[in-house]
Length: 206
Image (cartoon, rainbow, N blue to C red; front, top):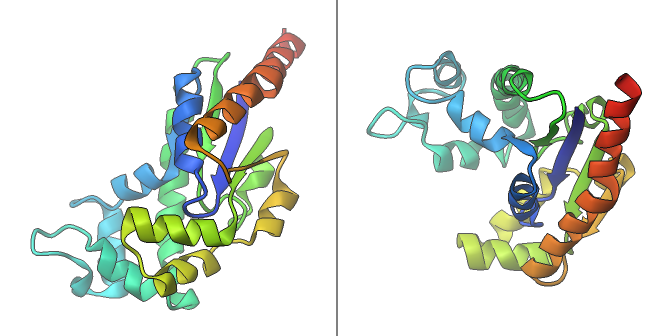
């Protein structure tokens, strides 16, 4: 089993890369999806968030008010660390459960936005980073997510810089062209690097 850590700055194109890898046959474990799962109503994760941040973090239906929480944590590093301390251990435990169910010959891709920031890149056989120029990422966040430039820059500032991610990567794919070009780059990486590496690992264990 080849374990791949996938990451990239916000709006760099990581989600498109993850979908492409899944289409190629990888088991993709999405940390963002798990982060939502572990704070669903009735979970101990949501209870811990309310204990730490107050009942104002819930909407009228008793679900986590993500925009309200984001406003708090993206402007305060200490508060963000508190949230990460609640969510990250629960996400990692759930991701481990999902990986345990994978076939021995699978390529398992962990899609983790804060892979480098949390030091988890050291736990993988291969680290793939998707990057894009900062101004292009800001443009995408404004066009696709309706974010202000100030909010977009705050999100970028809360993550590792491009140099830090590149230092942790086995491969960096720069997404500064079309979506089709990124898809082809991911497919080429699968053919040339990931599939052969997985085959070599399996052969070495026989």
